[in-house]
Length: 412
Image 1 (cartoon, rainbow, N blue to C red):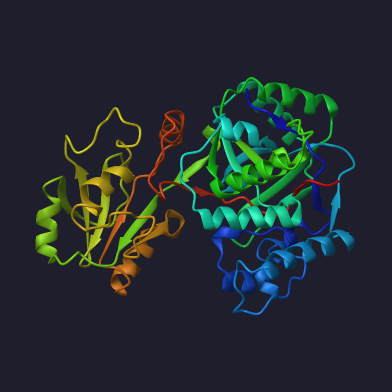
Image 2: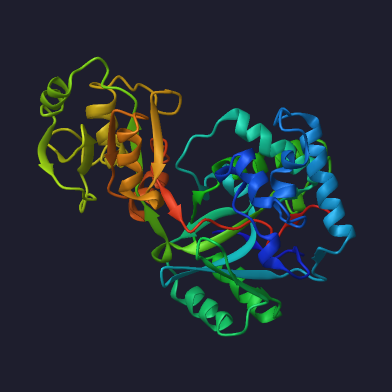
C-alpha cells in the first residue's frame, strides 16, 4: 500500500505565474539569474539562492543555504506565500501540445521510500544528495516536488476528473507554452477517498527527483536519530510529491554526443560498429521502434539496428536501448566506460530536437551524436520492480514540474 498524506500547503497568495519556476536542477546559476531578473518574487530566490549572492560564491557554502532560508522567511513575512489553514491535497495539471497530465500533490512516506514501496530506478550522487539535504534541513521544508507515478486506477482517475471540472485557484501559461493549473482539494470526503484509494496502490515509482527523495530520506533519518519519541507520523517523515498515472506521462528521448571517435577514422568506426549493428545511411530521422538508433556522423545520418544476440531480452536493464548502445558501442568502441563521469560524453534532452545534435557535431562540440528511441514507462517500472538501476540519462520527462506552487513545511 502507498501512504499519501494531505498537508497544510504553503503557496502563493497571488501572482502564481510570477512565483513558479523551473526545477532547481535544470538551470545553472547564470540562467537562473537571467530568468529571475526584475522578478523579486520568483521562487528561484529560494531554490537557487546563489542568484542573490556574489557570482563567485561556492554553491555549497553555508551562506547559500542561509540565503534560501532568509528569502523563504521574507516571502512568508510579506505574505507572498501563505499557509492553508487545514491539511489538503492539491491537484496540479500541465498541458503541453494539447495533452494534459493530472497529478495529485501530497506528502509521500520516507519509510516507504526506504522499504522500496516508493521505487527508484537511478543512482544518486552524494554531493547532490548532501546539497538537497542541507537545503531541506536549513529551510525545514521540501520546496521541489518529487515526480512520482503509479499504474492507472479507474477510481482515482474518476475522482481526479471530477475535481478538475471545477475552476482552479491558479491557471497560467509559461514562456515555454506549457499551461499550468492548480486546484485545492479541501473537501473532507474527497481527501478521505483519495487517501484510502492510494492505500490500494501497491507501489509508487520515481519518475524524476531521485536526489530530492534521497535527501528527504536522509533528513528523516537524521531527525529520527534525535527524537526518542519518534512515531513515523512526524512531518519530517514525509516529502512533497506530485503523483501522476503512468498512462498520462510523456517520456522523451535522451540523446548522446561523444567528443571523438577514440582514435578511429570514420571508416574504421563504421566498420567496427557494423559488427554489432546493421548500419544504413538515411536522412534525418528519429528512431521509430525499440533497438534502433539514429547516428549523425560526418554530416550524414545513419540508422543503426541492434543485431540478434547483442542483448538479453529477458533482462529488464540489458534490454533497454540505452544499455544496448552503451554495452555494444559506447563502451567497447568509443571507450566510454562510465557515462556518469566520463567528460567525453554529453547528453541532450529530446525537447531540443535532432537539430541540436547536428549543431553539436557541425560546430565541433562533438564528433558523433546518437538519437534514441524513448524509454517507456513500462520499461521503467520493470527495472524498478526488479530493484535494478537504469543507466544514467535514460529518461527525459516533459513537461517539467514547476516549483513554488505548493511547499511542504515541517513547521506550521
